[in-house]
Image (tube, rainbow, N blue to C red; front, top):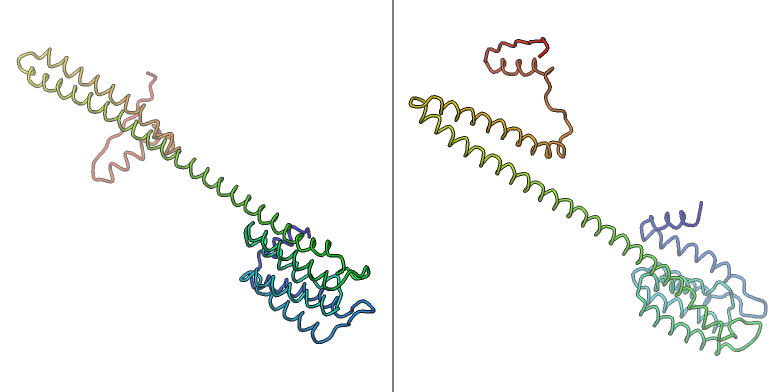
Length: 288
């Protein structure tokens, strides 16, 4: 299992479970280091275990109160150093707390926390002394190590913010594309509706006038009436043709079903007969 998959599984856990898992792992390493001190230095005693218990208990609340947890774990780490208990992993709880501050906070909080942590760590190193065997006697190194988890947490938080920003931009772009597509659909529908209105309004108006002429001239001038009705029929055919051409745009966009064909005449006749109308269907198969 890769490190990324392991981290993803840990993040998928409930927060309280993940926090307790971190406390367990940190407690295992820190306890092992606290149990055995370097020869010549104070060995683990009641104060050592009390500081460890306080650190682990505070670490369980690192998500809710990250800065106070840094103060508690940092005080415990300083207490170990001033008490004379030396260990490479005794600062692990405060490292996790510093990382949490950077991940969950902001850059200003990270800078202030780093400045205070580096100063306190340097002062503790000066207080303990400059013994070469004792790593606490090197103030410069002791001022640098608190900055490492803060820097790592800052990198992780910045990466998460960038990923979140990219995801938000992608979502906004998708919404913009959907709005633009909807706007174009509305415009196309308005255009088609306008064309249908123009076709029907103009043609039907002309047909109405021509039908009126045919009706008035029916008795007095049958030839004029016949010409008017012929024009009505031509106008109707032209209107139907233009209407079909216009509606084909909507049919292609909204439905892929084929138009009714001649082999469906039987179904059409059956449907009409079901309504109580008697229909006679005659097929002429002769070539036109």
